[in-house]
Amino acid sequence: MEFTQEEKEYYMRKALKEAEKSLAKEEIPIGCVIVKEGRIIGRGHNAREELNQAIMHAEIMAINEANATEGNWRLLDATLFVTIEPCVMCSGAIGLARIPQVIYGAANQKFGGAGSLYHILTDQRLNHRVEVETGVLAEECTILMKDFFRQGRKKKKVAKLLAQQESNSDISGNNF
Image 1 (cartoon, rainbow, N blue to C red):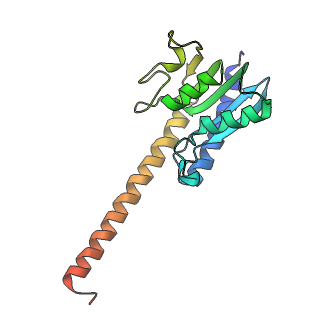
Image 2 (spheres, rainbow, N blue to C red; image 1 turned 60 degrees about the vertical axis):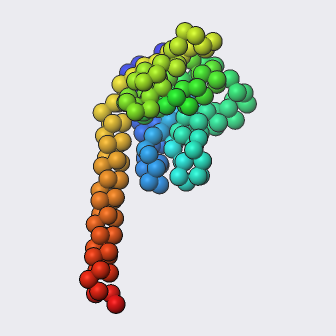
Image 3 (spheres, one colour; image 1 turned 30 degrees about the horizontal axis):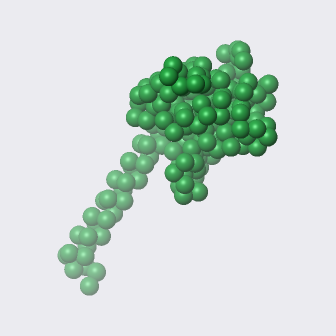
C-alpha cells in the first residue's frame, strides 16, 4: 500500500472532514477514514458525548463501518488515516482488525498508543504489527485540537464568572 504524498494528504483531509463533524457536535475533533484499493471503506469521528458511549472513538467507528463494508472482521490490505495518534484502546482495535498500515497527523502526548506513550502497533511481542507513519498534515490536525480545547477553556471561564456573579447577587440581596 504505497501512497504518494498527495494521496496521503487527500485522505488525511477526508479524515479532517470527519473531525469537523465531531467539532460541530462539541466532541473532541478526531476523524478517521479507512482506505482499501483507492476507496474509502470506513469513516468515523468521535461521538462519545453524542452516543453516551466511552468507546465511540473515530477509529472504532471507522473500523465498524469498514467491517460492514467488507463483510469481514479482517481489514487486510487497508490503511487507516486518523488525524490524531490512536489511543491505547484504538491501537488495540487496529491490531485486532489486522489493519496493516496507520497514517496519523499529530501525536497524542497524553494518550498515544502508537508512539508517544506506548508502541502497541509495533510491539514485537504481539502477533500483529502495523506500519506507522506520522506527521501527515500535522499542523492542521494540531490546530483543530488546540482550538477545540482553547474554546472549551473559554466556555468554562465564562460559566465560572457567571456563576460567581449570580452567587454575589444572591449574597448581596439583590434578588430577594
